Length: 338
View 1 (tube, one colour):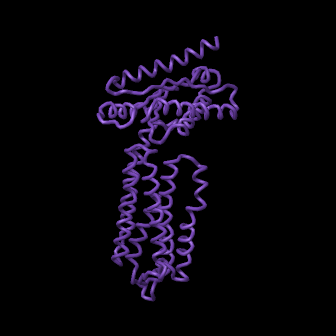
View 2 (spheres, rainbow, N blue to C red):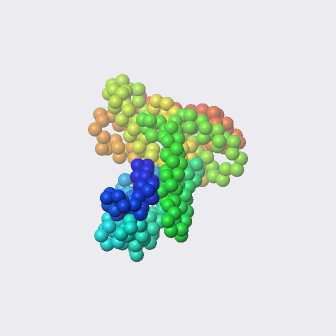
């Protein structure tokens, strides 16, 4: 996306420099370059929509289900853009090498803004599936190009879409890079440091509308898996377990790998029942993986969970509390097997 935006911005500069000049290459560049730019502008916003859809749902089946519908305006825009050099749908270049808007110019604007509005709508209605700190940066992205595009349409000759898209992508790039630094490279979950920061913030909040719940999760016999089957298999197990968490927890839940085979999740819930439902989802997804697995062993988890009253428990006391509950479950399994 960054490459596309940079290309659009360079095209703007090139078109301004060449307009009304009479070089032998001026007309081909203006004619075919503008066609490509119309196509790329809509494509860029469409890709931003796809990024947000995948970020929110993290589910390829959902992506594939809606792709055939959401891509229709893009296909229309691409077709009209690439046909414009011959039919003047979106623009024409006069004999003096001056750009003039075509009769169907608004269709390009409408399709581009369709994806901008769709993205904003998607982010807003699914804001409960993401962390509050993610909501505003994702919503902000679309504002500069939206205002820039409106001003450009109202003030013929002013080029604002390219610069405003560039500004938005710089903000988005910094945001995504900072977010990637928060994640464990192997599992894609949050790091222990981010857990510390997050629980520090929660422990200081006074007006929490929902209950807080926490889970301490450990992979059973993980050391044995590493010793017998090798660290490559151990890494694959960690990734598979992390994928189970991503399908089982909500986007608004905070799931972290705190070291080795240990994980901690912090969730906003209505009651203890909500935590039990998440645990059931984890067990269900894990059973599915085990039934399809080629490993000579089953992946099993021990989970300790409870509600966190920040007034009664400090974050460290609560972590010790759910850790004890997790080991209680682990010890109970060993007694059953012995």
